[in-house]
Image (spheres, helix red, strand yellow):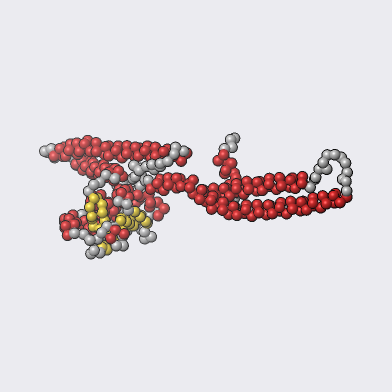
Length: 418
């Protein structure tokens, strides 16, 4: 079993009762403790030396002749001088001890401040590295710590973390590229299969009923696979942050367009839609295609996992002023009771909480994961919560932008609704 210096430091801090607290506090306490130990040892050494000098001064040699003193008066005078000298030495010794103790106490107080300052200077590069590492997420793996300075242990640690981030970035890029390329390449045989099926159905002459039923079912499955591949492409594109079509958009109009475009599905299921949208636009800055997909997925999720004859509530709220505010899209729906502890899993790919939520067990399980990815790409937050009466509540919060839009921007948004 080895006993390293770090183990000794941990053992010392444990004996001093410093297991908890920040590293700066522990280093400061350690500096003060070491200073007090060295100062006390120095004070003891000085006391021992001074005590020895005092004892030696009390013994006066008789000259080495071995003959008695000539007169009693001279001997008495010498004895008196020795006593006075011993008293002076005792007084000086006590003064030195008291002064040293006071100086040690003053320096102990000063050492607390010096130790705190020195510990802060020593740990400053680590704090910078910690703050920089916290800012780096899966969407910003291209950033690096880039710590400058001498080639010491801290610099080696920063370079090692930068190398790790580089490898993670390469791995994430390779994964996203694979998903995008696979989804793109699979579309070609999928299109061929759909075309072959259409040609077979378009041949003259009657078709057996089983063949027509099988063809209809296969066509529905092909459409499902096509939607799945499209979801893969959107998810890979969003996670990679590749969108350049940013503009000012009204979240309320996006939600209205999503509800209007699904009027047939809503009517087929007998759902009631309640809208709570202010006349004032709720502007955000982002990709039109992605934010429209976000609104579509949220509404699709509310329709697909709803009870027949149920309801959907759509609300758009803008809070704050100009760029300091936030815009929220809140979609609630009726439906079966959900476990709140597992609702957060719905934002992960292919999570559906079982077939009981979907009713038919269909669906790709990518709808809300795409919503979460788009929200994160636009620096927003997604909140999923199970309603006490059953159903799901989805809240998408995005950073707001300046509410003063031009007439041209308003006309562009109206074209989308039409």
